[in-house]
Image (cartoon, rainbow, N blue to C red; front, side, top):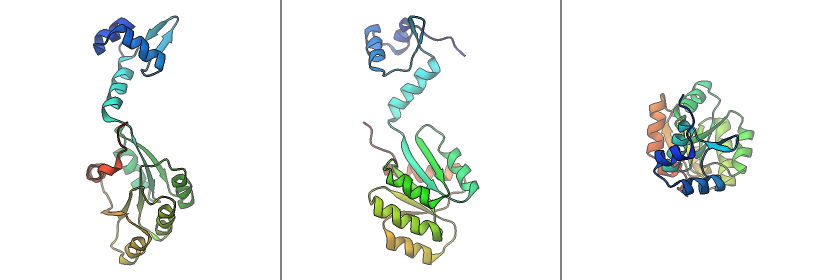
Length: 178
């Protein structure tokens, strides 16, 4: 681990005037630690902060699944600092979470219980994108979901790469940069 940088060292590192750094400190816009009466900056924190500025805000994603393997795949596949994943197997909890309005995308595995959950999600928020994973080709469940509202139907991902491919194909899964 590298020692923390001083304001002068950070100024050189970021190629910014020291007064700009002090202004950012005053506004709380830069990760810093105060040690005694002096500011210190850890390069790892600064680099992570710069990456977050470049990539924009993180997409908040809700996954509704009763399958532990899918939950692990989801957690591993979205661990790249681009997403804030929330996972639940309880459909009542999922509906409460959607009601909070804090999600940019909802994903669920198609089953009898999740079709009703999807119907409730659609009644709460018609605009939130929903991805439904289909493991088996059960046409009756797909028809019930179609009757409840609009969604994107995809084959259940088997790997983290499959999951990343799904997100890459859905630009609406990311919030707009502020």
